[in-house]
Amino acid sequence: MTSPESKPSVASGDTVGRIVAIMARLRDPKRGCEWDCAQTFATIAPYTIEEAYEVADAIERGDIDDLKDELGDLLLQVVFHSRIAEEAGQFALRDVVDAISDKMERRHPHIFGDSETGGHHLWEQVKAAERRQKPGQDGALAGVALGMPALARAEKLQKRAARVGFDWPDASGPRAKIDEELAEVEQATTDEDRFEEVGDLLFSVVNWARHLGVDPEAALRAANGKFERRFKAMEAEDTGFAERALAEQEAAWQRAKG
Image 1: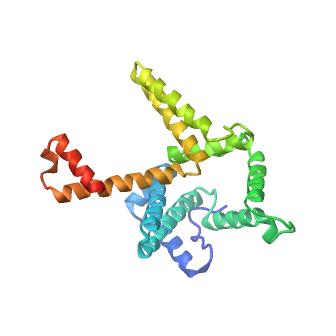
Image 2: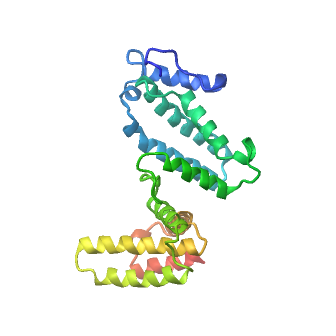
Image 3: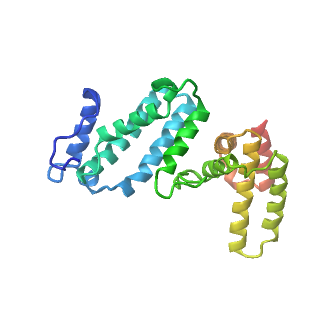
């Protein structure tokens, strides 16, 4: 382990070493940045998630220049977390790089080892074996991160359950479940019940989407984008859109759809 006073660690190459040294300077208690020095794993975690979304956004927009910038911002988050850990004597960036390198080699035995077969199925087997070696990680649903977007996490939980046979045989099961859950939402009489039943309804919709081969997170993201484009088109067509009656707004919406 390293101490806070030690020379900043370099994973490999001068370019990585430069950003590691910059972060060490920013975190220096005497000469560093007050904001950077005050941060913890918990306080910068939201920024880490945000940067990952911005990478995905740049990819979706096909903006390669922006993708380069956003990947840099995401890399900075890894460096930031690693520096905090290094100051606490826990691990450094080189340990992070070594760990992922070891993992990639371990999960590709057909490339780096003696196995003659490989593919995603073998990858999942190795991952499952790794989880079983961790305390409290021996169940089918172990290791599904709480910080994932809710739709994506619902899909992953369902896929994990399906691996052990807990799944509908076809799409008709989750489709019928949607009708059942929708009726329960309509029958709910309290805010607490409605909250629970709407959650069950959304979970069922994710299940149906999974059986249809649709990524629910990507589908909702696309729907958000479509709504945003059409709404902006309505506002561009009529600067007084907000003052129009609902019937007029609906007519404008239909025009935007066309």
